[in-house]
Amino acid sequence: MLRQSAPLALALLALLLHTPGRAQQSDPLAEYYGNTFVCAGGIDGDDACHIWLEKDGSFVMFGGMQGGHHGHYQVGPLRSDGQVALCLYLDTTGIDIPPELEAQHPGPPMPPPAPPAGSTAAAGAGSAPPAGPPPGAGGGFGCDSVNFRTTCGPGHGKPALDAQGKPLPLARAIIARFHEGMCYPMGGQKLGEHWVETDDPSPSQGGKDQAFLFPGHR
Amino acid sequence: MRALTGLLVLLAFAATSAAAADPAADYYGNSLLCKAQSSGAVCDLWLDATGRYAVFYDSGQKAYVKGVQGDFENEGRTGHYTARSTPAGLRLCLKPDVDAPARPQGHSPAIFHEAGCIVLPHHVAGELWTLTFGGETYRMGLISGR
Image (cartoon, rainbow over all chains, first blue to last red; front, side, top):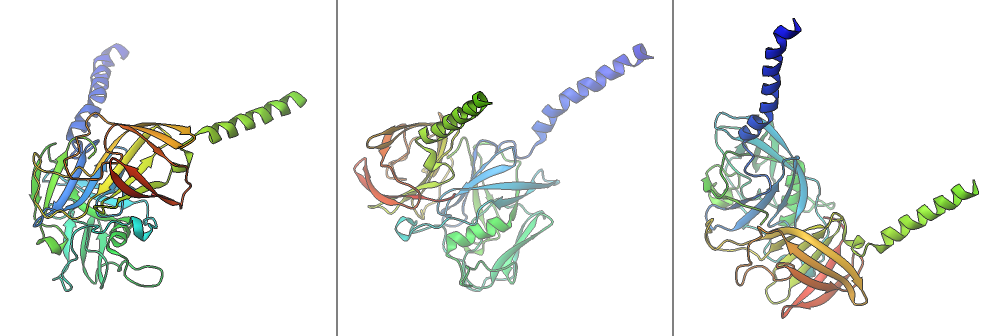
């Protein structure tokens, strides 16, 4: 019996040993690890974010957020278009920076005061990278995430307020939103690619984003 | 028993000395921020106990469209560092990862961008000071947290 089942056992062993390699090849985020994902405004090309995504579930994000910040992410189910919904959670709510060390232009311009109905990103049919940071301070503009999909717009989520109930400055509002979690479809691109996403939840850039995947940490 | 107590005291002393001997200990878990006084561009340097560092730059909004091969801003980089205490302060030597691209002319602050050494005066978290590097004056601050 043992002798008869040996070929089968060897075949199973070979399959097991081969599986990690195949799984790695099919990881839609494989090209992101150790490299730099950059999102920029679809209209003005302004840097909106840089993300260093790591395979261990952590990331570092910076750009328009007063320095870099650590975070962790969750990956949703693989979609038919080869992308996955990725929810990014910053581990911090920001640090207190003295005014004389603050960036003067920390990010893209504010969204229009009364944007249309909420727009969505992540698990749905469209694809959007961490596109411009979500609209920042002020008003009732917020975002909420359900089932790996983030929806931003008036009346969504909770506004980013400080302890006194005042709207947070833009950079801190962005950090607060990402602390709560922001989900975007990601993956499937190749290193060195530059592409345009058309369902950016940020209305300030016409709902579009430019996205880049650069080698190394930049 | 007396020998054991003596050993424990020695071990505790050794551990304390090792911690005190780490010249970069004040930087771990904190952020060294800089702001170039001429341009207003800012930077954020992280030193980790592993000998790795990361630095991020923000030179403000850029009203141009970039391309992968074009005039793209390099806003961050990583590498290894060594640190040594000197009478003038912490002598910090940075070696960016080999894949770190060169700084485009006129882009981010030059400080912490290329391989090289810099002396940072002794300061603790919460303190601000002024530093001159490469002909540029920077306002510096060691800020708690990241």
